[in-house]
Length: 254
Image (tube, rainbow, N blue to C red):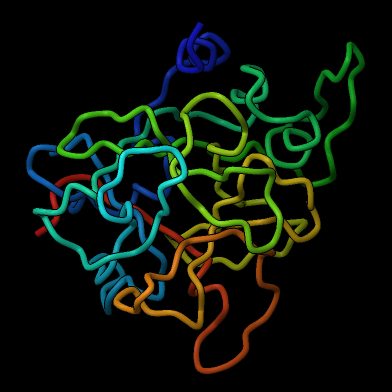
């Protein structure tokens, strides 16, 4: 049974806009016309533009390579670049992904729990203030054709682990949860969220999707997305969380 079938069996299906809060700000952008309205682009706040919904750079598969391990970078937004085409393969709540066996009980206790959760036949209380965060997989879909490969990690999340294409629906490493947990003091910007990797085991300082603060998308070699601990404070000319807060829009890039 596919992860999609398992997730939908665990909970009622929800719309893209309803589940992926990253996509809730506008229906303005994705990449190519072939991908169309079913596709999205995601990008960090640092490159969101002055209006926060006119991205300068968006998530891109390096050299359009549809293979496991291909790096994920940021590149200049374009409606002719299929490397910027992504679809939401799976969507739901963290609790749905736990029910489908895609994330651990510990992850679900922190990010997908209501009151208590069943672990090995026993009811375990959720952490105080726990919420059931939105969760999703982003699949690379050049020209709207699903590749079966999702934005994820090759190994369990640790600081510095690079983001690359990995098989969809197989492990927690391709699952991302929108961080709304008040216990980890996540930064808040309307429409922007830290994305916690589903394989995370550090619940006080979770590993989140990050763009390197010392890089720029046109640098060579291209800086790769990676995961590292959620920033707790700012330093330098910009806030650390400018590189860790993400959003996404649905449609075709202008």
